[in-house]
Amino acid sequence: MTVLADDEPEGATPLTPEAREGLIPAGVTLRRELNEYEQANITEARLWAIDRKRNPVDVPFCKNLHKRMFDDVWRWAGAYRGYDTNIGCNHPQIEQQLYQIVGNTLWWIEHKTFQPDEIAVRYHHGLVLIHPFPNGNGRWSRLMGDVLARYLDRPVFSWGGSLLVGDDEVRDAYLAALKKADGDDFPDLLAFARS
Image 1: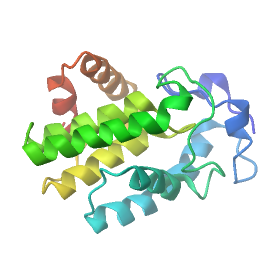
Image 2: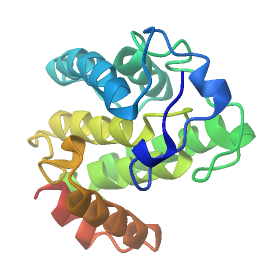
Image 3: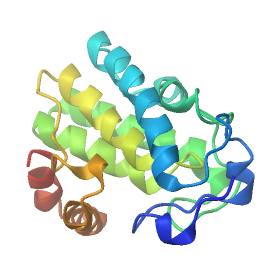
Image 4: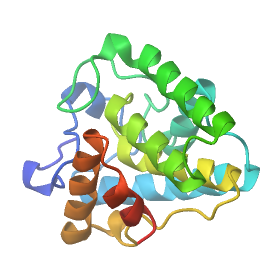
């Protein structure tokens, strides 16, 4: 498969040759074609995840949801990346980091450290920082945030409304809010999640 470099969205994790080898549908040559296959798979997984109203603060659930989101498109769906990327922790630390964010989030829930929306957004942000999978981490971590919001009796987030459609202005606002959250400054990401 060849994905054109200028077809890559700003801030996206580039697809490595190893990741591209795992593509299941034949004949995909452009990112927008890949996005169509992925979105159909994600839609099914979203219905499954949101309807379950299950606590997503669990490492096996993390892997299972990623697998469900991408298993019709990528052979490696639900498997941790085996290499370092432009974002995320070093790959040997992925599972340890996931258990840490899960433990932190469970503590926040139990001790009501933050309001439910902030707990879900902080969970999402922690998952983004880890970037455990070869690709799809942003979409997966937003859905993880949505599932946690539902579990905490909150509505799912809007994430800027058109983030998945390819609106560069909305994507830039999301990336800027994530960057601020990297410094433990969450108001912009919270506002974006509900915008």
